[in-house]
Structures are given as structure tokens and as C-alpha cells.
Image (cartoon, rainbow, N blue to C red):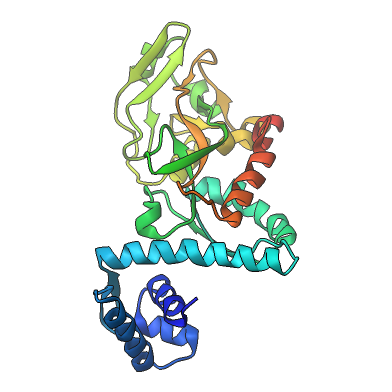
Amino acid sequence: MDQDYALFVRVVESGSISAAARALRLSPAMVSKRLARLEARLGTRLAHRTTRRLVTTEAGQRFYDDLVRILAAASEAEARIAGHGVPAGRLRVTAPTSFGRMHVAPHIKPFLDRHPRIALELDLSDGFTDLIGGRFDLAIRIGGAVEGNLVAHRLAANRRILCAAPGYLAEAEALMTLPDLARHHLLAAENQLPWRIEGPDGLTVIDGESVVRTNSSEVVRELAISGMGIALRSTWDIAEELRRGKLVRVLPTHEGATDVSIQAVYPRAELTPAPVRLFAEWLGSIFAPVPPWEDAR
């Protein structure tokens, strides 16, 4: 592999020439010179850059994506030819904040104990993450169908139930049917309403406004525990609170729409890098056939 190719990959992943120079222990001038030399050899501009920021051109992004796949394949080939068969390489993972903290982070150490040559990075965000644009290898998503250029490895069902604190229910009006929700305080983060609820009579859409406005799903969880109202929460998020009685289920014959699942999503390719495949399989083995949060109940 041409050393300038590896340098270009490091520059793109670092986000700037100066950051790449520090990582490579080179001067920014030397990194810039080698990048310019590579562009001259290829006959195209790969990136718009300053010493503080770098943005790939369309051609540069395609070249970067190709190089990452080539480097991953080369790393695996070297391991096989050397007789090691040890998966190695970088693995950049993104996940929703709460789910990543509660159900991904605790399983990283045993995974890396098995695969010590994999360098794993975990980014937590509640926003929709563009794998290609964000240069992530794998995303944990809670959703439905994915784009055609991605592969979705189903990890577990995402059961969502209506719940509230016992104190709230003791003081609020009786709740017997879905229409009764109109008389109650609802709790949801931005863009989480309306709710799509499935029950004996099929699918019902419940609209309204959250009694407290917030952009944080974790805040909604805490508001429900404190007795502010009724929330639609995933069982992976509130299993412990249900077990302890801090939250109780309401309208138990109804759940959130079942067309949403927990998935490991990664770019479609002829050869999926071993770290990506192994991490998806690792989480799948932990969450199946019954996820630990369901089993704990």
C-alpha cells in the first residue's frame, strides 16, 4: 500500500492536516506536501483544506471509501498469510445515547478481550447518523427499513409500552382505554409524538403535546419516574424501574408499533470487514433469543 494512501486516510479521519500531522509525528507542511503530491499523481483534487479543517471533494470521498476497504482487506490478508487469523483494524461505531450507554458499552471489554487487535471507537448521539458521511463502520439504530446501500442485522425487538409512576396514577383520572389518554399528561421528546399504538383493535395514532418540552429522551424517562405523566418507553430503557415498581405499565394490551427493531447497520459491500461482522454477531449473541432486559423482568 502506497504510504501516501495511508496518509490520506489518516488526514480524512483526523479532520485536518494539523491533527493528522500530530498523529503521524510529521510537520503540517510535510503532510500538506505529500497530499499535494498524491493529488498531482492522481490528477484530481481530493480535498479542500486549511490547517484547521479539511473537507473531501466528491472524488476524494470515493477514493477514501475505496482505500478504507482496501486497507481492511489487506490487514485481514496479512493476518491470514502470517498464520494468525486474528481480526484487526479500526471499528468506528455509533449508537443512540441511552442504548449505547446501557447496552453496548458494558459489552465492549469482553469483545475486545476476544479481539485485542481491533481498535474500537464508540460515538453516542440521539441524532440520525449518516454512516458514510460520518465515516462510521457500524451504527446501532432503532428503526424500520434501512436504505438500499446498507445492511441491517436485526439484534432484537424494540418493545415499547405505556408506563407511569404509581404516584401519578394514584392522583390522575382513571385510565381504562386509549381515548382516556387525552385527559392525561403525556411525556415525549421532540418528534416522538404522535405515538403509533397497536392493540386488540389494530393501530391507533395518539397525538398531543408533551407536558414538558425537551429534546432528550433521557429527560422524558426521568420525568416519568418522577410522576409527571405517561410515557411510551422501550422496555430496554425501563426494565429495572418496572422491576422495582418505580414505573408500572398502563393499558397492558397495547404497545408501540412493532415495525421498529434494534439493528446493527453497516454499508453494503462485497467483503464486510471482519471487525464489523464480528461486532454485529457479538451483540446479536447477547441480545438473542431473549434480550437481557426482557429476561430480567
